[in-house]
Length: 358
Image (cartoon, rainbow, N blue to C red; front, side, top):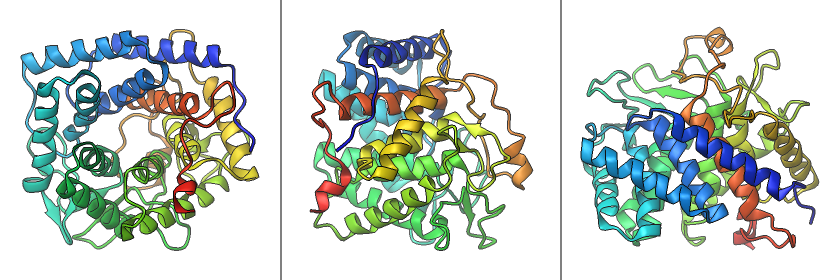
């Protein structure tokens, strides 16, 4: 089977620059840092560079001493790095705070319909009543799967699975297999009905990563596997000639967006990229994403934080000129998975998702 071709030292240098640039940012305890530091944690696991773990530890220790904000679904994303820190340091303080975040989701997070999490943001105000956003799969659903797997906690695992099922029900379009950005349960609509690149990256990446932790004998395994398979097939058909994905997947006139492309490409690598079409897509994405990291380590071409916009022009006109935590984190996620999956000896250190069903 062919592998993605890359220069390992070049990738290591890119990762180092991105990590250093990420720590130059003045993050707050919220989802942009949650995604950024998730990527740094993966970079540590891929490179074994102790400095990355130490910098994470110092940042979290300082902020935990300073005081953290109240819970909401988006803020729970910080739990990803808390779990990573616990797994690599054994320090209980990280685990205890991660458990608090998981328990908040189980018992206190606002829900609608069949228990689907309402999208909530910091500030304690219900801005999006009875709305599901695809972002929640990363911020909360995947976090619960990780916690359930790490702690052998079935309640966390079951709740994470419920969120994947619920979001697939309301967000995956049965005709195109793309995921909508959001669902409004009050109006019973997908609002503007846009297939947004970063949103589909949240769905694709979290499904690919979660399948490694869900028992193949669990009925939800094949449900999630089928959703991911069909989504990835659709995504391969709209990859741009340059190797990236447009911010509106079905609109080639919209700009190519880097963070969504990195998340989709990371899912492709996790899935195995084990068909000729998948392999070529992964190689093209890798080559394109490598060019999106500047000399300082800023990931370029990342759209700003994006609500479910009222119309397509809202997505087309969303700025993409500044450094963003999620851009840094998703780029690190992609490059780290490339390193972990493909070694110098062409031995795969991460088996593809497909192999688990054979």
